Length: 137
Image (cartoon, rainbow, N blue to C red; front, side, top):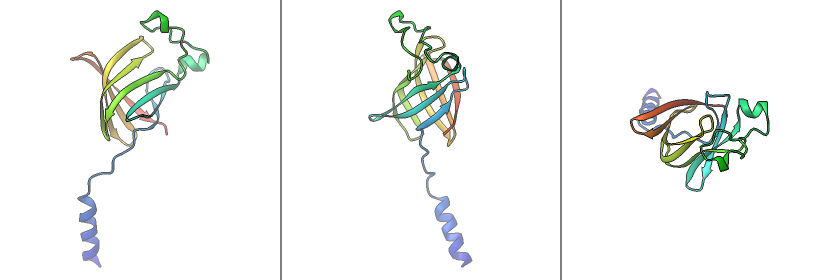
């Protein structure tokens, strides 16, 4: 019996870790923002669900956008992550939009654990910032 248990334990230890799913609701750690990540065709994208600005005013607009024509669009439901492909632990080739400064950055997303996501956004390398998001659900 002990031999069988030891063999099973070694067999399980030798298996690759099961990939975590990046989809779900994430706390960004900035301005009370929560972003829902979901599949968008073969890629993943993320939309703003809520933030301090949205809580203060349900009709809050994308007022800081660098493009004046987009400043009247609602913050709620705004696409913040787009065009990311890859996985199951790292996604590349996408864009990160930051409504706080109205700029879009090239980025990567890395799933560090089941409840931790690292986002790296760059204007031009090496001018990059990394943020850590925490899974809400």
